[in-house]
Image (cartoon, rainbow, N blue to C red; front, side):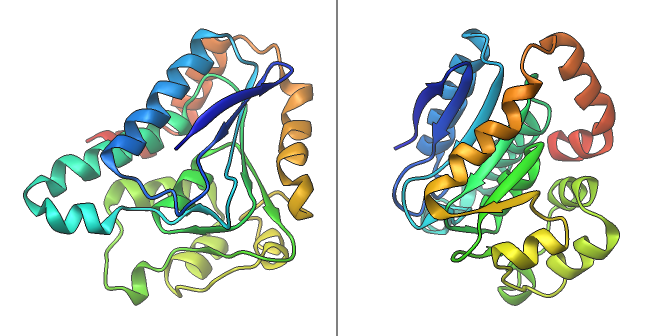
Length: 216
């Protein structure tokens, strides 16, 4: 279950201790915590997790049992990605473990990423599990990664450890397991105090194409 805490004025959203798959309830809870962080005037947001997964992405079990709601479900996932992408505060994903598929996309939607150096994988497995990227998801990834990194991550299904992910600028920094969240908080601390309206407008302009594709 996602929980929200604070380090000084930085909101720290722990996604949970299991696979943190995007069930509808999970998406609602994360959205509620984002509402709270914005309402509280948080000067930054770090998302992290307390288990071996940051997030394993789509809840395929739920989706298989509710195939008739697939379009609605994908819309909810993409709405979360668009919201994090344009959140009116600095954001960082602290990855203490695996980030797969839509979980990796959630990390990509943040301004910065810090990944555990010694264990855990960052992976877009879609090419190996025969799932196409939606136009919105592809636009998100391509808005945040260089063409070289996008090809390396989107077309190969490669599992990147922290060091390899940093070498391709998929993540911005690596840290020891116990320091991942603190490192992410430290990245954001100097950026506090930005006007939320201005920052949100800048992000919406920067990522207008991706946002339009995610919310189409």
